[in-house]
Amino acid sequence: MDADELKKRSKEFAHRCVKLAFFLPENELGRHARRQLIRCRTSVAANYRASLLAQTKAVFVSKISIVVEEADECEFWLEFIMDEQLMERKRVLPLFNEAHELSSIFIITRKTAQARRSKKK
Image 1 (cartoon, rainbow, N blue to C red):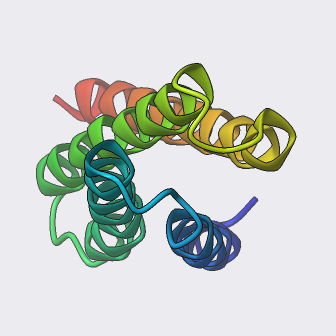
Image 2: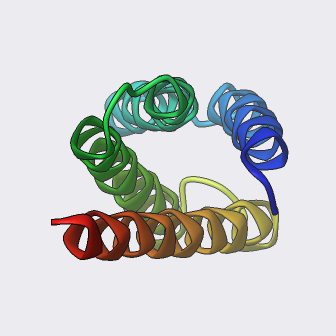
């Protein structure tokens, strides 16, 4: 998967998470989970785009590290939504699986960039 495909996939996933978030219950926990999910998921897409504009490998690694953290947080909130039964599991699980897959891709991306950076030193 190249950078443009990953950028598109990440953005589409952000849209899917935002749509899911608006179906969370209108109670305190539902509203909190909604805000957190929207914040972290859109942050992944935005920070991944920013990482692609990095002028050095060090800046890229720093930006992609933020992406990894936010992607993991998104996984957490989707899992939390299922654990708390705020929404039907079958509705959340496909997004959780996609979040996990994207997190794994970003982790591998960071490891590859770090390894390449270390070889150049």
